[in-house]
Length: 121
Length: 121
Image (cartoon, rainbow over all chains, first blue to last red; front, side, top):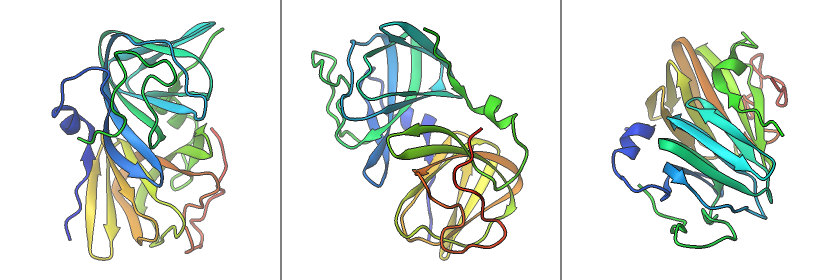
C-alpha cells in the first residue's frame, strides 16, 4: 500500500489567504493546522485549551499583555489557556497550529478575522 | 516579562542519544518530544493513541506491515492507534513526536530500546 507524507510547503501552495487556518491532519481529537500570518491579529484568548504555534517559514511575534515572544522558523511556543495574546508579523509568516478540534482562531473575541474552524487543505 | 521561544536545534544540541525522546513542551495533556533516529527501531504499536511524527532534519522511513512512508524535513505523518510501525533511518534523523503524556516509545513491544517516557531537555 502507498502511504503519502504530509508536506507543509506543498499544503501552503494550495491557499493564499492570511489568518485562515487550514487543517492538514488529525491526531486523536487534536488538529494540526497551517496558517499564513501577516500584520496584526486581534487580542484574544482560548479559555479552555492551550495552543501551540510552530513557525515553518518567516518570523512571528506573539504579544502578551506584559511582554512578547519572537519566533523564527524551527521554533515553537505554547500559549497557556486563558492567556490573552496577539500574533503579529511584519512580513508574511507561515505557521503550524496544534489545538483541539473546534477551536476558533479568534477565541472569545470574534470579529471579522474569525475563520471557519474546520477547513481542510 | 521575557518569554523564550523553544528552538528545536538548540534543544537537540543538548543530547546525543538515539531513540531516547526528550520532552520540550506540553499542551494540555499532550507532549512534544524531540528524538534522534538512526538505524532500525522495533516493530510496535500504540493501542490507545495516534502518534505524530514530524521530521526536523534528515530523512525517516516508517515501515508498516503492508508498505511504508518516506518523510523528509518539513513533512509529517500521523500513525493511527493500533497500527504496527517501525521507524528506520539510514543516517541520523531529527524528529519531533506529538503524543499524549505517558506514551512509551516502544508501545507494547518493550525491549532494550524502551526509553523513559518523561525526560525533559
